Length: 93
Image 1 (tube, rainbow, N blue to C red):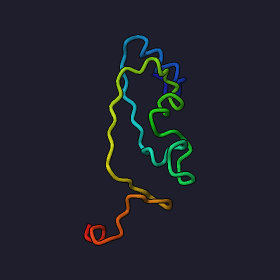
Image 2: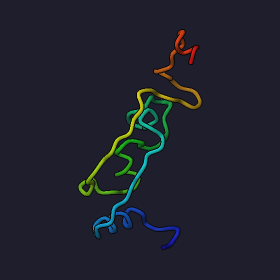
Image 3: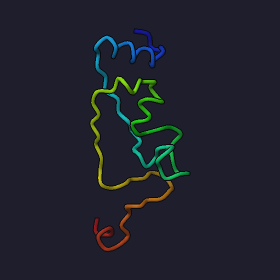
């Protein structure tokens, strides 16, 4: 398999042939271009929309979605940190 290819074509062709694939979004929704804490976001869609816009995968071919989430927000760099606890519990942690 070549190292550089038309991945939208490859993924959609393989799915049409019965193959499965796993896609993972790494940046979380708070950094999403559309739904994140603008202007402290990344330049792409990190939610489910990134599967379609970033990989070129056809939404009509999506069979299963598994969402994994946490109950708090983490942040690297600057920007809002809405779940930060600056009180006694936060100091203890």
